[in-house]
Image (cartoon, rainbow, N blue to C red):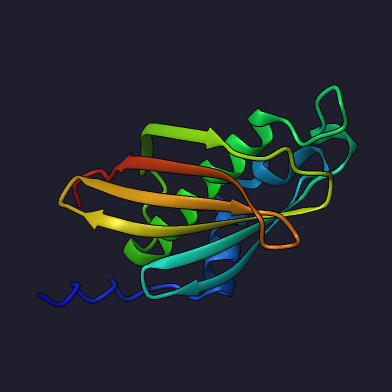
Length: 146
């Protein structure tokens, strides 16, 4: 049985970035350098440039930083595919930390696993600049009725 076709995005990476700036400006407060890198059918990639403020003792990127990247990446892939629905909200997010990444760019590649009427389930791979998987997350979002 063939796999179902990936959903088609309704926003480009540039449109999604502009929309996030409009409805979620606090994401960039405090100097967080977050950018939408790409949007493809069923997928979106978000980049976070980590620095000193994202580190935990020992000099590695903190868990809360990677959790935030996972959540933003899930939000990004969902909005890229359902459009301007700012009130989509996280109902569950589970993360496994696999490696201790050094400061520098981290990428959250999110993909839609299942899209229902009210819930969308995503999968997020967080990788470092060498494309090493440093964390893996799944997130479920609730989408308000249209």
